[in-house]
Length: 89
Image (cartoon, rainbow, N blue to C red; front, side, top):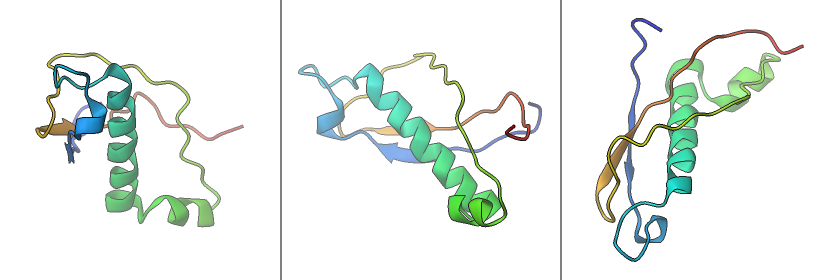
């Protein structure tokens, strides 16, 4: 969506990597969840605030495109993206 920008910095831990020091594929989805929760905290008062207003922030689908690898003890900039908003039914 146009004008949508948000990212958060995540440190790549040794536990997130393989023997070559490259981040494991599954780690990226965890980092995206960190970014999603940080986004909700920054712009919506946090996940609990949304729930207090009767809103659930659900992840119904995720897609990950691996552009560059993350390396141990480096930093990864995770940014959630959205394709649509709607009310849960």
